[in-house]
Length: 126
Image (tube, rainbow, N blue to C red; front, side, top):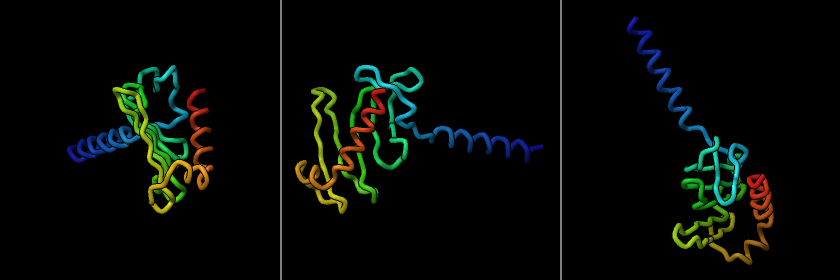
C-alpha cells in the first residue's frame, strides 16, 4: 500500500512540474490596448512565438517589458527592453555570429526577421 501511495505522490509532483513548465504562446494570449491577457487576466511572464524559436516577449502585469527575436541558429538577433517609468524602448541588434551591429546593417542583412516580427505583432493584435 505504501508503495502505491509513494508512486501516486511522485506522479502528482511530476504532473505539477510539467504543468508549471507550460509555455504560453502568442496564439494563447490576447491584446487590449497596451496590455497582454491570458485567460482574461493581465499576464506576467514569457510569451513565445508559436514556433517556440523565433522570439519571445516578457510581460509584467500585462505590460510589455522586453522582446527578443532570434536568428535561425538560435543566436540572439534583436532585443528591445522598455523602461518601466519612461516607456522608452532601447534596442540592440546582432548578426548571426553574435557581433553587435547597427539598425541599418540589421535592416540590410536580416529583413526576414523584421518581417517575422511584423507578422507576430499582427497576430498578437488580433
